[in-house]
Amino acid sequence: MAGGADGLEALELAIRTAMLRLGASLLERLLALDAGHRGPRVGCGAGHAATFVAYRAKRLDTVLGPLEVRRAWYHCADCGHGSAPRDRELGVAGASLSPGLRRMVARAGAAEPFGRARQDLAGLAGVELTAKRVERSAEADGVVIAAAVETEARAILAGELVPLGAGEPPETLYVAIDGTGVPMIPEETASRPGKGPDGRARTREAKLGCLFTQSGLDERGRPVRDPGSSSHVATFEGASGFGGLVYAEALRRGLGRAGRTVVLGDGALWIWNLAAEHFPGAVEIVDLYHAREHLHALGALVAPTLGPDGPGWLAARLGELDRGDLEALLEAARGLSLPAALRPELERALGYLETNRERMRYERFRGSGLFVGSGAVEAACRAVVHQRLKLSGMRWTVRGAGAILTLRCQAASGRWEDVWKWLPGQTSAA
Image 1 (tube, rainbow, N blue to C red):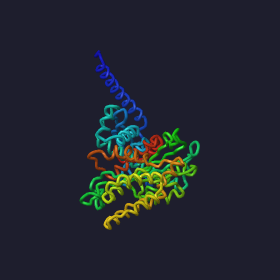
Image 2 (tube, rainbow, N blue to C red):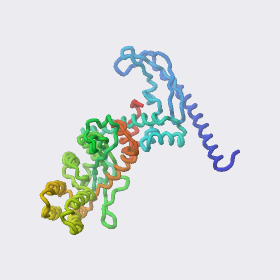
Image 3 (cartoon, rainbow, N blue to C red):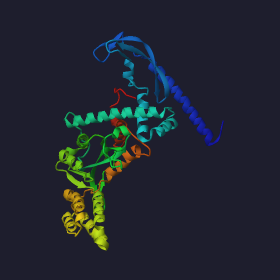
Image 4 (cartoon, rainbow, N blue to C red):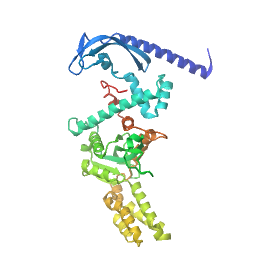
C-alpha cells in the first residue's frame, strides 16, 4: 500500500469513485422497479389521450454519476408529440440532469463562472459536466425560480398570500435601493443610448433592493443592523416592475408590523417616485456619501473663483451638510459671485440639494438612531451583482443574467432552501 498523504488521497478518491459507481448502479435498479407504464392510454395534458408506444431509454446525469432510465413512452396523435409520464413524476421532463444534480449545478453556477463551476463539481463531487451544460441548467432553473418569485410577489400584492410574521415586529425596516449596470451582448443593448464616446449602451441596469431591520444601537449610540436580517430582490425590469417586487418583499418582511420604515437611496428620482407610491409615510434618506460627492463636485466647480479660500469654503459647506442645515448651505452657494457662464451649472448642482433637502436632515436622522448611509445596498451590489456578473470579459443576455441574479439573491437572503421547493414539478428548459 502506498504511504504518505499522496497515497491516502489516491485511496480516498478511488474509494469515492467506486462508491459513486455503486450508488449509481443501485439508483438505476431502484428506478427500474417502476418503468412508468400507466396503462394503454394516458392523458396528454392537452385534453387528448396518448397511446403507449414502447419503452425507451433516457440517459440521466445524477449526483452519483450517469445512469440510464427505461420508461414507458406515450404518443398523442392529436398533438403530434410524445412524452413519458415517469419523467414528469421524477422531475426530469425536458432535462438530462436529476433534481439533486440540478440543485448542485445551480448553486455552483450562481457562485462562480461556469467554467470554474464545472471544475469544482468534478473535483468536489466527482461529477463530470461541460461548462455549457452547467450554464444551461443553472440559467434554466434560475428562470423558473424568478418566475416563482414574481408569482409569490403577485399573490402577496393581491392579498392571496398573507406572510406570517416571525417573532417580534421589527422596530425599523429599511428598504435600501440602488441600480448597477451589467455588461450585455450587443443584441441586448441595440438602439439603447449609453454614456460611451459613440453614444451606445453596453450595459443594462439591474435594480437591486436590500431590506434589513434594526432593533437597537451600539454602546456609542450608533444604529446596528440586526444580524442575518438582510434579504434581496433584483430585476432588469423597469422601475414599475421592480417596485412591485420590492414592495411585496417588504410586506413579506413585516412592513405592516414595523414601528417605522426607512427608504435609503442615492437621490435618483425613480427611487423617490417608487417610495412615494409604495412606502408613503416612510422616512426618506439620501445616502450621505452620495450627498458629499455632489458637494465635492460643487466645490470643484467654484474652486477657480474662490482661489485659496476654496478648501475652507468646501469644509464649511460639508459641515452644514452633516448638520442637515441645507438652508445655510444653499444660501452660501447662491451668494457666491460667479461668472455668468457658471451660473447654469451652479443651479444644476444646487438642484440636487434643493430637491432632496428634506432627505438630508442628517443630524435629525442620527438623533433618531437611524442609518444615514446606504452601505448595505452598496455592499449588496458588489457581493450579489459585481462579483459574479461583472467579471472581466463577461457579456450576458438579459435572460441569463436575470436567472443567475435571482439565484444569488435567494442565496444571499437565506431563502435557498425555501425557493428550491418551488422547482419540483416544474419542467426544466435545460
